[in-house]
Structure formats: C-alpha cells, structure tokens
Image (cartoon, rainbow, N blue to C red; front, side):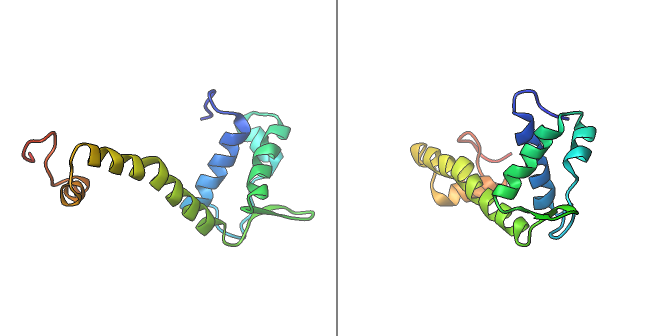
Length: 125
C-alpha cells in the first residue's frame, strides 16, 4: 500500500488527508494513534508521528490531551480549498497555455472537456 518513492511520513499524512477530504474521517473524529498507524503499516511509531504532526502543523488535526488526535473543525473545507487551488495550478493553467499555443478557442476547449468535441483536429467519433 505504501510507495517506496515517497517518504513514509508524507504518505501517512496524505492518506489521512485523503480520508478527511473524502469525508471518511469527519471533523471531530479521532484519528488512529501513532501506534495504531505503525502497526497497520508496519513502520516505526516515530515515522507515523511525523506524518500526524505534519497535519497538526497545518491545522488539520488537533490534540486533545490524554485522548489523542482529532480532525479539526474546518479541516475538510481547508483541504478541499487547497487541493482545488493546486489542481488549477498543476492541471488547468498548463492546459490553458497549451490550448492557446494550439489555437484552440474557449468554445472548442469546453466542448473537448465535456467529451463531445473534436479530437486531433478531426470530427468527434
């Protein structure tokens, strides 16, 4: 389940963030402990803690003394806002630049996105 190309703590943070964004971990819900994460992923508890701390540092998790870490209020909306911005920067902006380079007008681009436009300069199939 874990990818060797990305640091383990980053993968732990991303998995928990994905669960929050998807709604499977709700605001106010307890997040698995570092020991639970370490046992599940078969990693060092310090590595799991580092992943949890990344999310806490970003305001997505909050510590409740003596009982654990919980999803912070507003965490899902913050994640979705951040991810929408990153999506626009990584995918939409480069797509728009390339569309302009290729002479694709807005109407054609919208049609392509909807899946009912022309592809490769030819008519839609």
